[in-house]
Length: 67
Image (cartoon, rainbow, N blue to C red; front, side, top):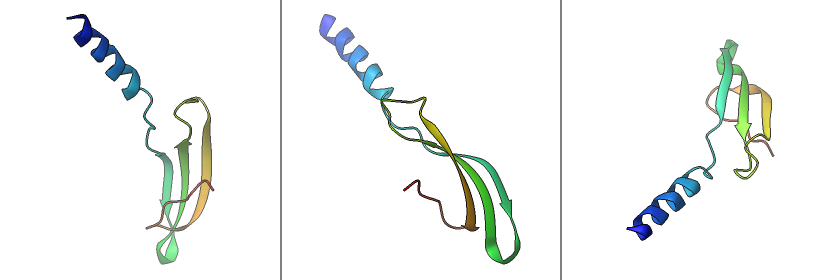
């Protein structure tokens, strides 16, 4: 029974360490399939408070990279 409890705690801890997906804060479509997007990125799962907002101008069918 202790093993099941320990495995449950381990699973809960590891689930919390996965990286969250990026979040689109703003998306405005302009002329010629061009977009202005503000995207909040989630970087290192060990530092969940380290977030970055990317200001993107470009094609609407692409996602910006932080690199």
